[in-house]
Image 1: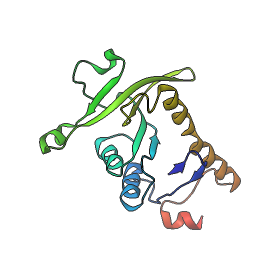
Image 2: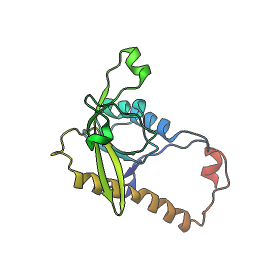
Image 3: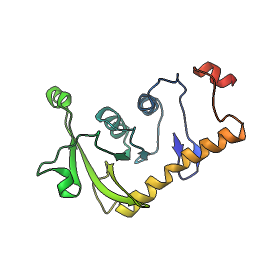
Length: 170
C-alpha cells in the first residue's frame, strides 16, 4: 500500500508471482489498523464485493476505477443510461446467503482525454466531489512512478526471482 499524500510505502506483503494483490489487501486490512475514514484508491484490478466489504468493515472508504467487468445493479434503470448515481453491488451468491448489498456511488469522470467510471463508497457527492475523485485517482499513479524509479535506482528493471524469499536476496 502506498500513502498518496506522503508519497511513501505504507505497508506491503510479499508473495509468489501468481499471488493475488486483492488477497494481500484483504490480509493487510485484517491485520493492521488504519486511521478512521481512510480513503483507499485502486485501479481496475481492485474490484469485487469481498474486497470492498473488507474495506468497509475496516471503517474505510474506497475509490476504484471500474469497467465492463463489474456488474452493478440500480433500483431504477440501466446504470449507464442514468449517467451514474447510487448503485448496488450484490452478487447472486451474496443475495442468496442473506448478506446485504453494498450501496455505492458510480461517477463518470474525465482524466485527461479519457472518460472513465469511478466507483466510491462515499455516497455524499458533497463530501467527495467529482473534482476530488479525479484528483485522488490521479494521485494513485504515484505508486507506479515510484516503483519504476526504484527499479531504475537499484538497476532492477526485471526481477529474476519467482518467490518472496529470493526477492529479498535479489
